[in-house]
Amino acid sequence: MRPTFMHCFDVQPDFEAYVGGERGPLRAVFLEQHLAGCDACRAGLARLQAVVDALETWPLAAEPAHLKARVKAQVRPRPALPRLLTTAVACVATFSTCSLTHCGRGPITLV
Image (cartoon, rainbow, N blue to C red; front, side):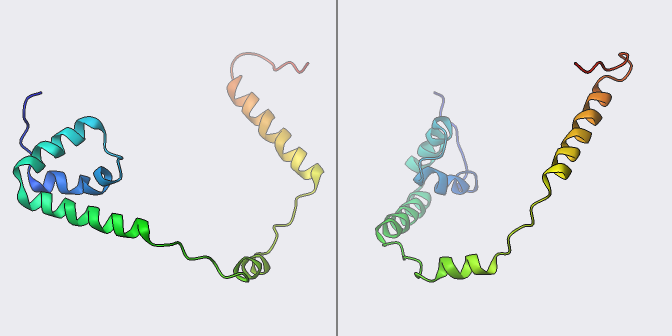
């Protein structure tokens, strides 16, 4: 592969994806080529990696036991539509779609 010169401002937005393993292989090669010759970007990537490593060691905080109950108490249930109304809306939508797709093809025959 031919070496490609990339500026710091081209590769720095990729640091986070690179550390997370989300960058595609070709883009990672370009980033690694740049890092081989850029002390500043190597140092910046090392700082980011150190932060990510530190965050991965922190324990997750458990939610308070009463939180789930409080949230559920504040959420109002959505009123259910009567079954007949739901069926009628579905029928109208279906026939509207059929009539739009069969325009100019003659009458629609229901089986």
